[in-house]
Length: 477
Image (cartoon, rainbow, N blue to C red; front, side, top):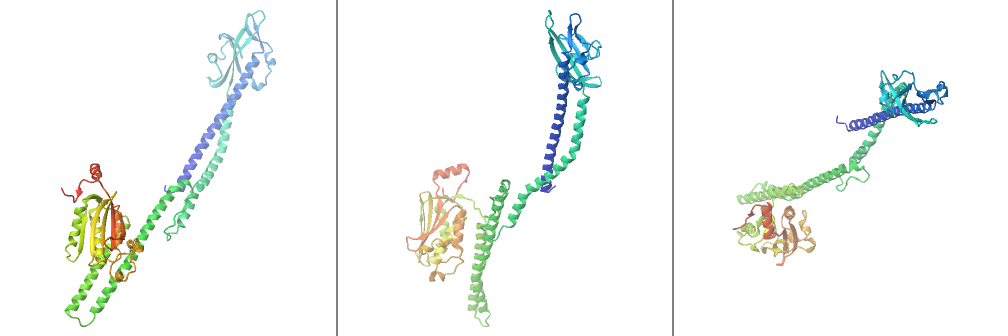
């Protein structure tokens, strides 16, 4: 049974039927108790009346007047069929049929108000104690038991059952209708919420479901949907950005390659010219491949599918391995300096960040002095990549990490580039809990700074003991 409506309906109906059964049982018990109360009330009246229509015979004890029946001051319906007089000690005196104590032999052993099986009938028994004052004699105490069969009680029970059976179909019909109405009311909140979800404007990335007017029980579902739709919008925005990046980045290299192909279509080309055109095409294809890799990595990081493993790294060793490649360029004025510091990061990510910043400095400050240095400042480790180039205006220093942003400078505009290098630098840094900044360099150009949390030797020891990492990668003994 996969229908929520049927499940709710059956549950409510079963609950109402259970309530109806309990209510009918209580009504039956109340009706029976009322009939029993009426029976014993009549027996009590009869006992009180009988105690007043007798006298004490010094020889025979208590005796009824010959006309005792006419002396009874009660209605005929309150009179019982059986009675028995005894002394306070239980010695038989007389009974309703004058049977010498054989009329109610089993009843004499009972006390109080109760129902007793007697042969093939059930008797209602009431016990009454009374006293009689006789002139010149001690106070006489007697015991009286009156009894009546329970035909009236049985009649009341059968009548109650008939009434309950008569009303049972009406109760079932009412339970069915009430269950359906309650089910509709319960599920109406789901229907309203469904319409609200259907009217959700997915094209508006800031739109969320209004949860203030929905039922409290629907709040967790609404919050889950809002979270899901937020993530869906984020992925949709990432895909849109990927398409925009692709269109933006492919435009220039494809145009250049088309120009090269147009030149190759010309009839006459010397081998040297063909070699130049082929080399240009190869360079553009290499750039196109690198740009595609950048865009895929950009999408991967922004979609949250890139979680590098953090480890303790000795910064001097890692930085030396990074700059070793750049020092092969004899024309490059590269200066490296720094302290022996340990950072908590990822080796590959750290290499990518510093390599991209150095390539950026070489590209935009060709022939100028470049400096790489690092130091612990307070609770962070600062890595600086400085160049002595033209620098970046202060108004553009924060926007330099945005997609495809290039500040308005004629010389810089002539430099080719994908526009994604610094974007990836910031995203890679964020993936290892690092920050990136762009400021003016003390050597005259631009300074790019990467901030890592600083780890003291004691903190490193605690991390090793806690299992945060097992070794310091790149550290020397």
